[in-house]
Image 1 (tube, helix red, strand yellow):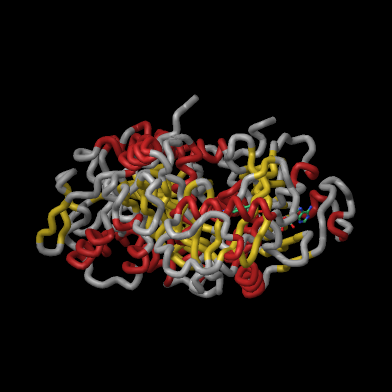
Image 2: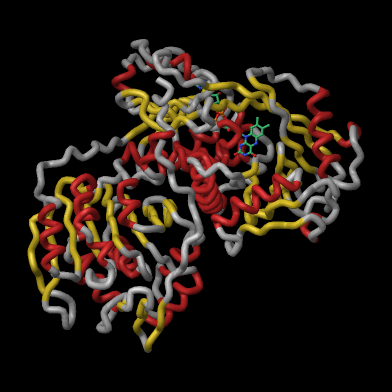
Length: 602
Ligand SMILES: Cc1cc2nc3c(=O)[nH]c(=O)nc-3n(C[C@H](O)[C@H](O)[C@H](O)COP(=O)(O)OP(=O)(O)OC[C@H]3O[C@@H](n4cnc5c(N)ncnc54)[C@H](O)[C@@H]3O)c2cc1C
């Protein structure tokens, strides 16, 4: 089986600033023309590809840049987008092998272009220097996907329908890899009908490579002292561009369905959300205090990778949504505890790959101050900061849906996909496509021909009072313990395979209390007197613990099987589906998307 590379720490850029130019010391080449960075990028890329005009004419424009560098092309493109009165979706994808840290970027931009209206809002959302795909929502209709790593190998993992190619790597003489025939050949797969490209280079090899990839090339006047540059239009056989849709119906209003409904609506789709309960977020997603966090493990497969991508994405998205919605969003620190010395050394090994230098991860040894007040049996752990927690999901998401004017139909249960009288609308299923199934409880019944292998796992959480300030961090291990501002905490949760019962069980409260006494020093076992509330939910997990995200049949999609990770994985899984509906670039690697296919079990 092909091994999917796990995200790993990557080396930042190295550069020198001379007056107002920035020179890469890795490639021994400047990042932009001495005659003006922004002016050069505007001329060579934005104007040569008629980007403003594309924003006026199209519902979406996907731009693929090679060499994100200082982000000048993105800034110019954002200027162009802002100058046009359009509700086009800007889908900007950029490869970068040696990204700059946030502080490096601030320094370089200050030296080269001074203040720019969009610079700080982009920098604030940049991901840590970890390889792989990073989806960033700059504003609801402006999406940036940064792919950190070597473009030559990562390009085969990109699934996109590209309208504009910006070829802006360091010069072909200094950076041969980025101008290789193999890379150009992949443009044929990625180019949309009418795609164009431009580059400051007019080297013969580039011209031949682009012609071979199916582009009619043309030499034009370059910027400032450069006599020539190259542009071209994709003229190969007409590609069948995906037909974007203008509406979507979603079955199931848990975190998966709500995340999709909100993003789809933000991106301009008309959304109908249907739920069999009295209100949205009523079943598994009524969880009173879910955490949004990665899992530190030696799982270097697609699950481990998805866990990191989803965590970074969900943190950014909830942060953005919570600016306008009361989701009870809080960013805190969490310690993933090691119960044995062996566990701890496994965690350390996993973290070596990601580099302990990352500022959001820190190993904490037994006896360190971060573990003060916790049981001496704990052998250490990893402090992850920030992680997120949500304490007002039910009210917050219901209000968010209302604010987006999303049609929400409750107490309606979809029971048969093939019946003509679909949801009482007297229309066949084929007339109400696209349809997304985000209803783990009944999804299998609706698609009996597909083996979804969903397994229910009941879980009970227990709220205890009197934790005071004992919990400085959320604690995670076989379950988790996280505090609220009033001094209470939720201990979560139990794990009963193939059990869908909603009854509250005293023995489960006891298990949750044991977790507390095992982890926290001063709380003895069996403190039933501390219990103030209990909650039960059912997780629906697949056999391989990867979610079901993708097409079931023409126009019918699955967004389910999120197991015990729905609040962390749901937003990114929803972004995969909405991208497919709108013909936007996929936020994860093709190989990961394939591993999430709901058809994988047959
Ligand atoms: C104890 C416990 C602790 C957890 N802690 C965390 C955590 O810390 N972090 C985390 O990320 N995740 C956590 N989870 C997992 C998380 O709660 C789930 O993964 C998530 O809620 C699943 O969301 P969903 O949208 O897929 O499903 P649900 O929230 O169950 O939503 C599905 C919706 O579909 C509706 N529906 C079903 N059938 C139909 C039909 N035929 N027609 C119409 N509507 C239908 C249902 O009414 C329901 O509202 C925890 C789970 C448990 C049990």
